Amino acid sequence: PAADGAPAADGAPVTDSQGDVDSRKASQRGLRRKAAPMPPSESLRALIKSDLPETERIRARELPTSTRSSILLAPTGKQFKRVDQIVKNLRDQAKAGRAGGPGRLPPRPSQGPPPPPGSSQRPPDRRAGASGSVRPSSSGAPTPTLIIVVPAAVTCTINMWNAADFLLKGVYVPSADKRKDTSNKKEPVIHHSQVLSTGMKIKFEIIDNVAKLSERDWKRVVAVIVQGSAWQFKGWPFKDTVTTFANVRAFFIRFSDEDTPEMIRSSDVKTLTLSKEAAKRYLDATVTKEFWAHLEKFLLQQKRSLLGLDR
Image (cartoon, rainbow, N blue to C red):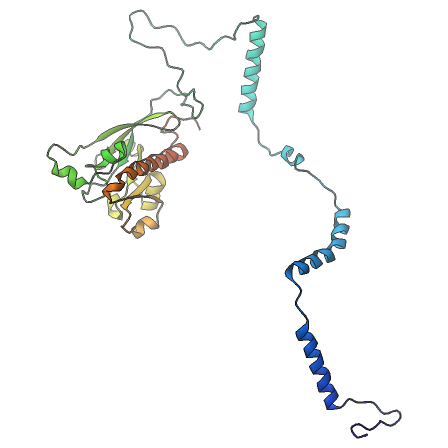
């Protein structure tokens, strides 16, 4: 073999010296270090540009089956017989009005014979539900008085001593202050009429003793103020608190510096927060409105039959 630096014999393979190999590797490493990475934006443009030919070939073979307009006309299987019947009735009334001559209105539905003279019976008020938000039941049955249950313990934030102030007037008054005044007394039942946002007027009873409620009465229980422990529901006709809170809207009312019990955090209970500062008593009305708003939503969604509404 030829020595390093000497020319190789004819036909012999030419080999690099170790110095040449090391020099070439160092040069390659230097080139790699000097190469700047491609900016993200340029890399993205290069990627999109490389896919354009394939994308054009795919789009050339596409057969559009629908558009933004045609998809709205796709059959869904739903039938609107009730709407069709309403439209048909309106058209029939319009035709009847035209057939009766100009200015003649279609006949109004019969309201029954008038009450006899001297009778105290009043004709039915057909303006109820005219606002269109909700429609009373055609059965004509009166709406039952709904029940709200508050804790019996006087140490609770809301109880029978101050429930009327908070739920009816939107002001929190400590129950201890109410008990100090000898002119105040604890009522067994608080009666209240609440007008919903739909215009319906609903009667409520606020109680703290459920021992005398019948099976029929329990169907009228729609809300409960929770004190934070499961034993509050001992004797209730539901197997557990999960079932209870599914049938009755539950509220937990606390002060801003108090912790929420684990039972409340892990259950379907709406937490409402009051302030202990006397200067912020004006915020109580907002909390009261939030209570009635959540209760109304619960009634319209899950207790429509109690409100006398058609499903």
